[in-house]
Image 1 (spheres, rainbow, N blue to C red):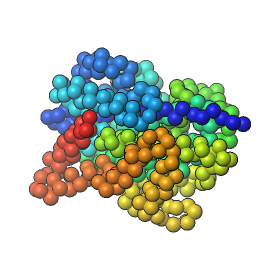
Image 2 (cartoon, one colour):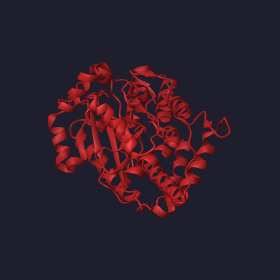
Image 3 (cartoon, rainbow, N blue to C red):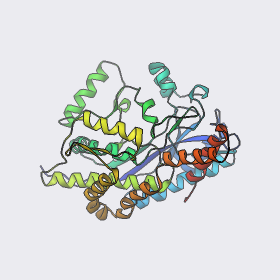
Length: 378
């Protein structure tokens, strides 16, 4: 059966933490007028999140990466300007360097109250933020097939996006500590491989009929068919502090999906590997980012990440050129040169300590770095 060419539209969602510019701590109870001001400027492209110290934005449906870059820049810029009027700032990272989850207040919303009532302390600890990339694929069967194939690349994407090395004021030793918190929820991680969309629906119906979840929005896998839009939603990535890194990774996602679709049209597909093996690379990405490489399952050995990224780019670059985002895909190499946000946070902390500052002062410097980088190049 011949499939209609997917639209490969793009949508990017980012969650930010709101900090007090003076104390650098999370603002526990931001002014009620703040979200109202944001909505007056951005409409339904901005919303609250589980905790009052979080805010979420989402681009419109964009037809190319450049359009997504423009809209994301507008959203970030407006959030920066509105929060500044209240002495606050957003930071685009997945954990705060030192503020504690136990001190935060939950957003009074039925959906969130239901979540915390069901999940208890597991949900209350969710002081984490992520970046989600939606790609428009309007065929149900194709979404399921491409979800299975893209799963192999999810650890690679995480490696390039890490931004959560600190938790409760401590260096965790992980570049993405966020996922250790998120994975405590049910229905997270690498998805099961499904044979068809009807197979996927059967699994969802068992859980909804049993009453353990309302609908498929309560599936929180690293990649999932969106329950709200005709998209495939990649969710594994930490929030990128630099906007150009976020755009590069979105370009890599959409280009790779187009490449996998092109293979399918030739009756070919990316080789399948078990979720057990992919989870091993996922852990390595959480622990090391790209510093210690990932496992090449074909070779059965750990390979430097630079080689794997070259392979990743080679797979997607033909389609990136067709989509007009080959420069953005090639720019993923810049992340290796300057490090992820996690690398830069740790370096900022180490330099501050070496300069004679105490732990609290060094962590404040990390927050200042995050404030500045979040607002840069908008």
